Length: 289
Image 1 (cartoon, helix red, strand yellow):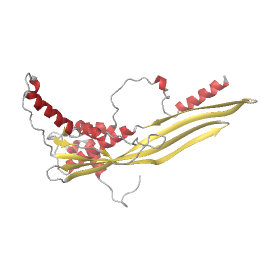
Image 2 (cartoon, one colour):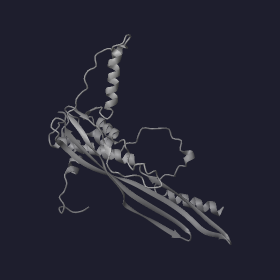
Image 3 (cartoon, one colour):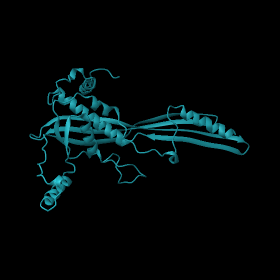
Image 4 (cartoon, helix red, strand yellow):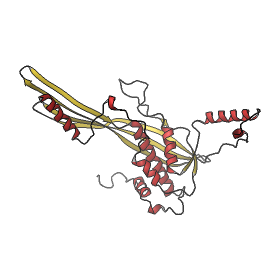
């Protein structure tokens, strides 16, 4: 009975730290859901509407970090996602500022168009492919960049306490991912805007244990704990969304693209916040927070 009471107290202590009770693998039967979105996604939705959407392409958004997961993970498993180009196109679509043209799978698209042209020469051609194929649309802007840094153990620490054989500890670790995004004029090759954004990846571990003699030659030893890791791919997605937001803010501020007539930039709180963040204070000026 004493063992049950002690373990119950340890569980109650962990729950009092502000995190929900951990769920075991046997209980984890949740159905698939849409990917949770961070505040940066809703910032894109709140941006002012464009006067006209920009025709843009993304050929790739590569992992340029060269970082692999530490052992005992596979030496071929990278620390960050390899699908950042898909994330970038999703953020561009969400902003409402771009008409995104397919270029990452361009070879597949061209192959399918060849198949359609070959099918049109045969009898009994389906109605939906009888018409002449229009030319592919050309873009006037290309978005380039990539994931340029992944730093581990940027900050780590913890705290704990032990009294009469009962202890509770909390440890945390902070990693950081950085992305670069630039808008390039297709006609001239000029870089119109360039931004870098960083996002922290937070991991925390909580545990509690007891080491105590209940009776002579009877030792009670118990431990409970759990670890939560912020998904790295969601942090990369959030950093990319923030980069798109800052890119739009730079373009609006420099009059490279314009907002719709009924969407004044001066009355948009989200845009004003991004413009404020873009104003870098020179080193040595201003006080530290």
